[in-house]
Picture (cartoon, rainbow, N blue to C red):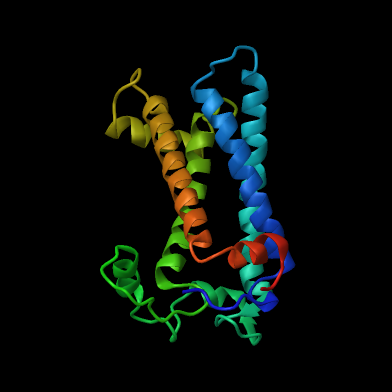
Length: 216
């Protein structure tokens, strides 16, 4: 169960990147749904422009956050003000080593007591790393089906591989790549909903810290 939230648990830059992530996800979702289901005519150009603008914003934002891991110090234990390099929070730590499966059992209601954890639980770290990988994956698939970039060699190779594995939609990889893009996005949306639910299940203190930089 989350401990006391102190300002040393994050950094103003990470508050900014979290806000940027939230806004990017909102605009990407709305514009992406319109691109897939244009129920109102005449807005496709605006939707596509909005979609790619916020995709670039999201990619730059993630790169900034990754750089911040190695250049900014935050606390590595819940409720403490002692700081160390932030990247250590994303790696296995002595405090919560071997706590991955107990955490899974806890969230599946097979375990009553909340496992011992550092600032981030083992399952939480895995989910965060997966979200980064999926974001780059959805960006790659998006550029692979975007007209101005789909013929670039790095995206053309991806389309050829996907087309050879899933040979439908006109004999190339654009249709299956488009479907992969959509499924990854749905996975990210489900992850975002679960992430929001878990951040609020024990109260609003985590949200106050990451969005408002405000202690309990």
